[in-house]
Length: 412
View: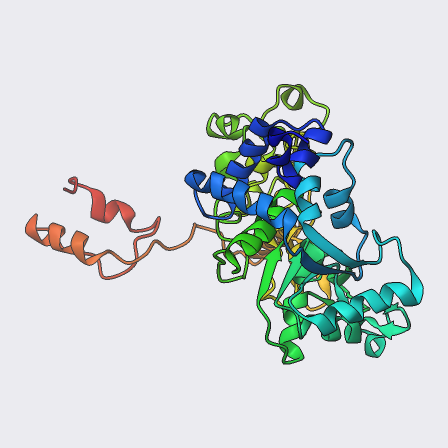
């Protein structure tokens, strides 16, 4: 082996084997450093930490798959070609994953319990916690899903809730929520389990954001800066609207009002067909998905606000508050009744208009409209002006019978 070959790090050897250049790797490190809140200047430190991690102890991870569609696992692992994120994820030791692990049955569950016993691991939770039927709505390996979550999370160094379902219950917790699903934060709080939690919403989770959090934790040994919802503030601190490539059309008042129209073909703003970008905070337009190829709005879909998953809400999660996705107005709710504001407003307007018409016909039939209605009594200001002009102010309301009496001679 030559001296040059011996100085190549294990990570660089993996990158070279997969056709990833050093330059591309460093660009990735810049993006990770920025998302982790370290700034571009920290990119070399990120690269050094990643290279060092490949030859040292890997970070043990237990990935639980709860009530979900496995979309977050797919987003993280199912790539068309090996990318940098998939290489960096090899820095962790994924000891347990129902979807990705080669082992199954007793041996797979033993990998989880052994990891818990050894400690020093991170728990990644995908999907909603199913509390219904005393936790029997979801059973894994013969255990209640709720017991599995408690056993896995209470001894973890940190818990990462990936995807909107894990953050606030997602689709499973939408009304009427018969399985009594909820997010990880709400569940652990109710169970009295105190453990650091990082919430990374969107449906599905963006793999680069998960990698950024893991790298930050691996390199610094601590969690990234979090906001009041325990979300990485640098990832979820700017609105999608601010960074949207269709923002210029919004400013110009150029909107898509119907799919399949000329306006849609021209790439106009999707706000009028339900885009929730102005009230949704995430870096989707910057990071994007599928190796940064595209994202929802760029693909022609309005933002549905999945990053608005709020772990502090115990009712009406993001699915309830953001639907219907293709309408500008949200559903309103009174008890178990959901409705749109526009039909209600139209109905109330129609009722009021009908009542006024009926009132008019009633007035006419009663003869109360004959001669017109009395005018209001003269105002203090007008009375004062008449007095200054040497005229007597009326003491009764002006109507058709006496209006001429008080207007002859002209008023000021």
